[in-house]
Length: 202
Ligand SMILES: Nc1nc2c(c(=O)[nH]1)N[C@H]1C(S)=C(S)[C@@H](COP(=O)(O)O)O[C@H]1N2
Ligand SMILES: [Mo]
Image (tube, rainbow, N blue to C red):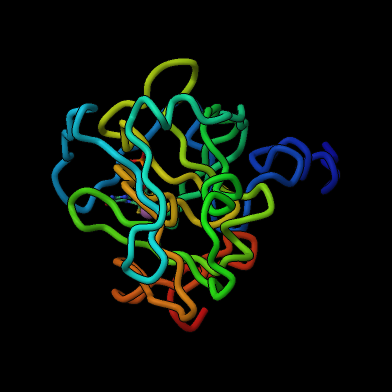
């Protein structure tokens, strides 16, 4: 029996037409939970979202005010540095473009997302804006599960999923880069899954 390489290549359709970055596998319907600490449970009446310039609060939304902001539906593949990927995840949230436009910060070149529990992650402004990042408060048609970052999390699907900070409470706009939680523990500063930027030095 002759099996052509092309046939095997297609059968091995794990990469779903080129959607699986190098070294990743498809988890299918599973949605793993990866948390470096306990799940915080901030009541919605005490939840707020702040955009800071440096460390100065410049804009703030209560939960109800945040709900009233224009939301976008997002359907994207996500890629964790521990090598699982999940295709076609569906979210709803507010773009970082809209949140950052609410303040005037011409000096801003970097963004840090900060969360309940102390987690942080850093992004160049170019990775945070241009329709590439959102604060999402809904997943698959329902409220975001606390284990997956509810009430709200950052979603930056074009970078490894550690950049998608769960339980996010705000964005800090900076004129300089400030590596976050995993970025100071040896993970790559940017984390592009297509370039396999897993660890610092990759
Ligand atoms: N606040 C916070 N956000 C976090 C994490 C965390 O430990 N704390 N883990 C990150 C990592 S490494 C991944 S892969 C994803 C996991 O999200 P999930 O648990 O919804 O799959 O969240 C990211 N955001
Ligand atoms: Mo991760």
